[in-house]
Length: 69
Image (tube, rainbow, N blue to C red; front, side, top):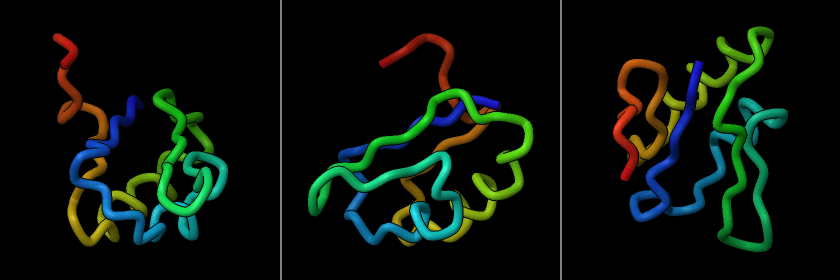
């Protein structure tokens, strides 16, 4: 599964970091680092993290544009 975070929407609430620490990491106070390719054993955690994002900044799988931005 592929993951993209809309960093213009992300407000640094870090719910994703708490729910899927192997896929998301805070860098400094507000910077978010994330894995674009999610390992199979982390898929459910990343789905939970996307659902918990207060601003819905995390896009998964089919929602991710293949055309790039």
